Image: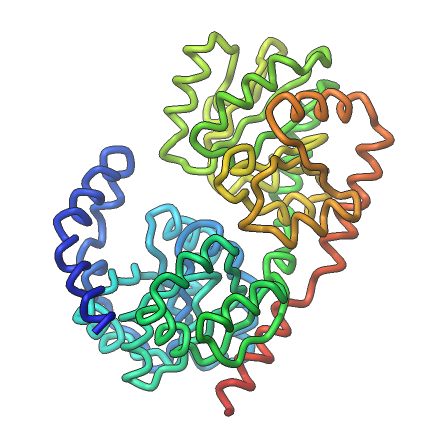
Length: 416
C-alpha cells in the first residue's frame, strides 16, 4: 500500500517533473536531450551480457572509476552499462570512460518505466553508488531476480532520520538490496537499521581514485605560469557560499595572494561571474586564459580539472561546508597532497573529514572570519603547509583498498 501511494504521488507530480526539466534546460539545454530514456524508452541495441552501474551525477561517476575497472577485469565477457540522472554526470562519463561503457539515463521511478528499463537492458546484476534508493526500481529488480548491490554506501544521521519516517516504504526497498558495501561502521549501522541485510564495511572507494597524471602536469604548468604568488583555492563551492568567501577574501592580507574560485555546478559559472563583476572584483575566467598580475580571483569555469586546481594551490577550502549543506569530497584534495580547510557542516563526509583533521591533513573553521584567519596564517607558514601536505598524502594512501573489498563482497553475494 505504501509503494502504491508513492507511485500515485509520482504520477501526480509528472507535470512538475516536466516543468523542472524545462526550467533546468534554460541554462543547460542538454536536459531536453534523451528525454525518452527518463521514461524508460531506449532504442540502442545492447549486448547480451551487461553489468549495470548507477552513478547519479558527476561526483559518483568519477568515484565509480576504480570499481568499474575492477568489474571489467573480473567479468571481461560483460559490458558496463553506466546510468546517471544529470547531463553533467553523462558528460563526466564520456570524459572518464569514453567508449568503454554504454551510457543511458536511469528512468524516473515509475513502475512502467522501470519495467521497460530492465526489459531492454536485462543486466546480470546492478551496482548503485552511494545512496540511490528507489522503491519501484528495487522492487522491479527483485521481481526479475536481478541482484542489486549498494556500493560505497553512505547515509548521514539526518538522511537516516528522514528515511526512518517512512518505514512501510523504505524498509522493503533497503531489504531488496542483495548486499551493501558501506563506507564506515556508522553508515553500516544506519543502513542496517533501515532494513538492509548483508551489510559490510568496505571503506570509501574515492580513496582508490588515482589523480590523472596529465591533470597534475597541467596544475604544475599553471603554478609555473602564475609565478611566485600565493594561491588558495575555494573548491566545489555551493550557492550562497561565494558571498561568504568574498568576505573572507577581503580579510586575507597576504600580498599578491590569488583566490581560485571553482563553483560546484557548471550551471552557476555565469552566476558567480556576475557576482564578482557586481562586487568590483578583478577576475579572469579559466575559459578566457590564465590570471594576470592584477587578477584577484581566477574563476574556474571548467569541468574535469579539479586535480589541476588542487595541484597548483597552497591550501584549499572545500565547499558545501560553510552553510549547512553537508560538505563536498575532501579525498581528492588529499590525494593531490593539498592541505584542506573545511567549514562546520561536513555531515556528508563526516568520518573522512574527522580522520583527515585527526592526522593533520585538514583544519576546521566555524565561519568566514575563521576561514580568513586560517588562510592568512597558512599562506605565511610554509613549514605548516608542508606538514599538512605530507599528512594529506599519507592519509589518502592509508585508506586505499575499498575497491578490492567491495569487489570481494559483490562476488561472494552473487555466489550465495
